[in-house]
Image (cartoon, rainbow, N blue to C red; front, side):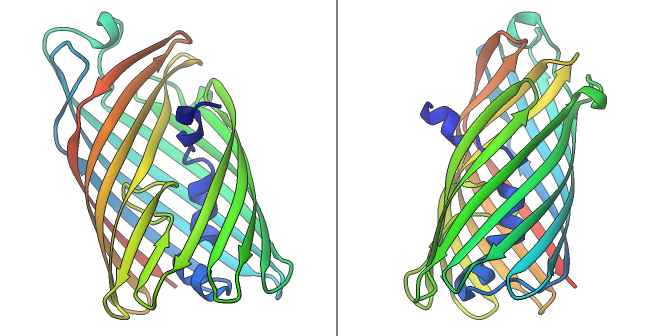
Length: 303
């Protein structure tokens, strides 16, 4: 497996598992997150960036909505549910030609729907095991939703040390649109001091599962973080096997504010780099995406 393949951890898998079970509060305490229901809304916007060498430019804007439910069944078993929707908008400026050697005009919108469940088992005070299947549809306005399904399942094991720090290993099986892959991953939540923590940036915004964040807790209600993460989006462009994959890194600064026990607000400022736009017809063609700045904001309400 190449490094590129390793980092292409789809949103169909690890992000959902993390939203159910890898929250910083749950990891640090070693206790399940008993908030039965949460809803969140995120907006992500990027600056304009050049794509390829044919005088194209792209500006992106996304709205993401998620509903998460977490239900403890007893002291050992818990189950979670998730529903998500993403409205991803692409504003293309094309200099008299189409993408990929005049093969395609730029799409304007991508819709992404997802649903999943998770089941976790706490063996003892140290070990916890999880499995999380998920279904997703992601398609551009030039394609049909009926051919845009993806599904996957994630299995993982987590070990909590006596001091509360946690590490875990897992594997994700992903039957993505026109591609099947198996991806290993590592989860970490390490409390360095009372204020400093190293972990995976699983929060909403433009962070992603393949990355690390160093965070500082200034007060019980305010914390800051900085880190880097891998992002990947794959969706159906047309027919039943013509897909686009956007693969890029983002470095970011984050500030979080727990306004009340129920309301959490998070802001990100970031910088995308090493981006690629990949067309699969199923022949593969790749265009580069220049670096660009980005901003993101998330509001979450816990019932």
